Each structure stands twice: as structure tokens, then as C-alpha cells.
Amino acid sequence: MTETPQSRAARLAHLRRDELAKGDPVPLPLTMASMYHLPGDPTGFNQYGRFFNPTWSAVEKLLGHLEEATALAFPSGMAAISAVFFALLKSGDRILLPSDGYYTTRVLADRFLKSMGIAIDTRPTSSFLDGGFESYRLVFVETPSNPGLDICDIAAVAGAAHAAGALVVADNTTMTPYGQRPLDLGADIVVAADTKAPNGHSDVLFGHVTSRNPEIVSAVADWRKLSGAIPGPFEAWLVHRGLETLEVRFDRMCNSAEVIVQRLKDHPAIDAVRFPGLPDDPSHNLARMQMDRFGFLIGLTLESEQAAESFINKCALIQPATSFGGVHSSAERRARWGDAVAPGYVRLSVGCEPAEELWRAMQEALA
Ligand SMILES: *Cc1c(COP(=O)(O)O)cnc(C)c1O
Image (cartoon, rainbow, N blue to C red; front, side):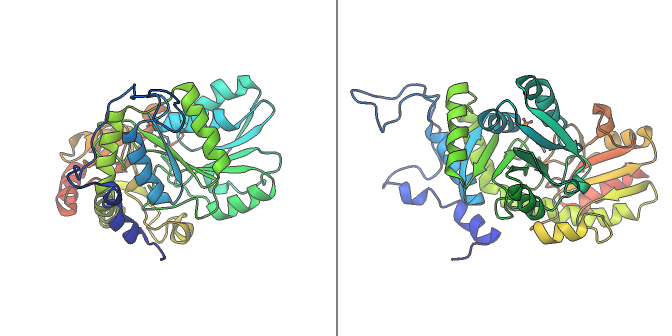
């Protein structure tokens, strides 16, 4: 059977069905446990809450289904990224990061990997292939990059990086598995913040690592077990619930973004728009090749910091907030965190509000 995003979405809500005995609850029970009943030989049984939890396993099953890989759950996106770095890198290694990706990934590498003797280089996402990948142990891509929404060719990076002997990690947070599947394009590892659209209700931090390589999975699982970077069962339960509606929310968010971006582009108060779905966007051709959807994030440049702040704060249907991917639309001026973008650059996360209502509110705020 060839799976499509639709067939994966359809089966997702029924994955538990095979495990159910007559009379079992259909929804996932929340299991809070540090201790498991364990007389005698512990081999092959649930042993301890740092090693195993059935509620994490249920989320991992959904994430693994969506990416056709083994998934490991973490308490945040950064915990997932840290696990990959600390489980797989050693002194003397050299790694390549995007210079325009999620800021905290670079800070983590700079503050903690460097002092362990790991060399770090950075490169812009839009020219990530330039210079090749000779001498790298690990190459990390984030596409579309947050916040600039530039794209790199994952299959081309994976081909060249593998030829040079490097592992390829893709941060897929901005797309989710319904928008892009980097493992299909040759990446060895996907990391993502389920804090964003997968949970979708802005009430939980969560992350995951997926891979189809059993050695990588085993190293990252050992890291989690030994370091104790484990997710809470309740958070896992909430993410499980979120994942059951991800396809519906993501579809609505991407559709609305496609409608609204066309109108923003023509609005006199907007100087520039970045969205991979616009035919004249520098990312468009690559986006069509490697993404299933164009996403729900829009980059907007207004003429000044003041104009951008006024748009964000006046719009009744936009939450002025950092982070993205929630059911409510949200936006922020990324320069307030020091990202290398124009002072009037706004990262807009289109939520699940009906598109025409959202557009009306935006028009009022821009007037
Ligand atoms: C938010 C984010 C992260 C970090 O996730 P947390 O859950 O906040 O730790 C990593 N990468 C990208 C691209 C993100 O947007």
C-alpha cells in the first residue's frame, strides 16, 4: 500500500484499535507511574518511570506512524535537539548549523559543544549547499528556516553530506510531518518541537527525534534514559490528543495562509512578504519539489518597528506572542530577540480562525 498524507491521517486515529480488549476505553488512558509491579527477574518488563511510560509510547507510536520511523519523545524541542548532539557527537567532531535557523540551537552548540572540543560552522539556509560538506560529522538543516522562511534542498544536502561521510539532521518544526518528510528526502534524523503545531493548543512543551537507523535510535534512547531528559506523562497525553487533530488544523492553517498571503502581498502597508507558496518567492520551486504543503508561517515586512508593533497589537484576532502553530493566530517582531531581520519584520503564524474573519481583523489593524 502506498501511503499518502491522507491515508496516514485516516489511520492515525485508529492505531490503538488493534491493542484494545473488549471493554477498554477507546481514548488513551493517562498513566502516571514511576514504579511498576516488578517481582523477580525484571528482564522484559516495565521497570522504572525514567526508562518507560505507556503514555509516551502511545505518542511515539503516532509520531512514528506519521514519519514511518522510530520516534523518541522528549520534554521539549530543545531536549530533542540536545539528545541528538550529546548522544552522537564527540570531541574532535565538526558540525554545520544554519546561521539563520532557530537561535537557541546555535547558542546551545556555542555554549556547550564548543567547550567539549566540537567545532561549529554556520551557513545561510538559502546557500547551504555552497562549500560542500567535507570534514563534517553532522550537518543540521532547518527548512523552511525560522524566522526567515528560506529553504534548502534536503535531498541535495543529504546526497552531498552522505558522500562526505556526514549525518544529516533536519529540524522539521515549521512543517510537521503533514507538510514535509525529511527522512523520505534522505535525512538520517528528524528533530521537531511538538510544542508548536503538533500539540497546537499552546499549553505544553514537547519534542521528538525520529530516525530509520536503529543505531541512531538506540544511542538517542540511551541518552534519554541516562540523562533523564524524559517527557512528563500528562504532557505526552496532551500531545497525543493534539496529534489526533493535527491534520485538520494544519490543513485549515495552510489553506488560510495561502488565501491571506495573496491579500497581504497587495496591501499598501506591507513592504515585503515571504511565503514559500507565492510563485515569485525565492523558495517556491524548491518548496514545490520537497514540501507537501507551504505551511502556515508568513514573513511580513512593515515599514518600521512602530508600524509592525501597531499591526500585531491592534489586530483583535492575533495574539502578540512568541512561539507559533497554535489554534489562535499569533505574531511577533523577531528583531526584538536580536534575529538578523528588518526591525519591521513580523513572523505571522496563521491559526484556525475562519480565514475571512481573520482577514477582516488584519485589514482593520493595517488601516
Ligand atoms: C520552537 C523551536 C524549537 C525548540 O522547541 P522548544 O519546545 O521550545 O524547546 C526548535 N526548533 C525550531 C525551529 C523551533 O521553532
